Image 1 (cartoon, rainbow, N blue to C red):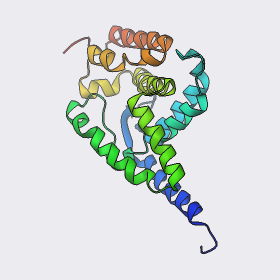
Image 2 (image 1 turned 60 degrees about the horizontal axis):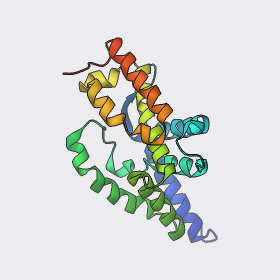
Image 3 (image 1 turned 180 degrees about the vertical axis):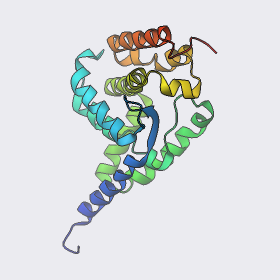
Image 4 (image 1 turned 180 degrees about the horizontal axis):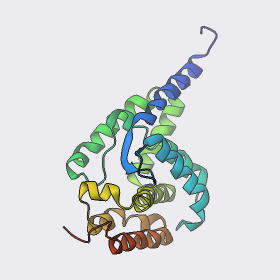
Length: 201
């Protein structure tokens, strides 16, 4: 390995570490309800959605490549921090601290320029500082909505989530795409009508 540059070795260490994302399981079930999806599957599916749905963004000059970069790396911090369920108010109290620490360690494995670039993209996504981040967040929120609807509300039922909670948490989809929010709202209304999502507790 002596002939391999330190830069390449750092990049390969990060790639090996990123493999652990496949072992971080989310609350959402696959559409056939057979098991929960993992973070790597989630990230891939989001990128596919961006390729298909970028035209529905609220923003005229959206940098699609930047959105894809954000979504490929946005959940890597969960290798250390774990997945925080979006309706778990107690876990959300420590989420920012846990994820910031994870970002420092994980992106710190990379060469300095790439470490900074990845960290900047992650911060942009978390703070929704750019149009690309707002659209990325919209797609990130829409994806579990789609899976929950396909799985007939399985995750919502397990956690006793209500339509009011789902609508409140996912309303920010509208910040990135008005049309995707309209679609999301139709999923909520349909889930309520079918008895998969109670309107209130």
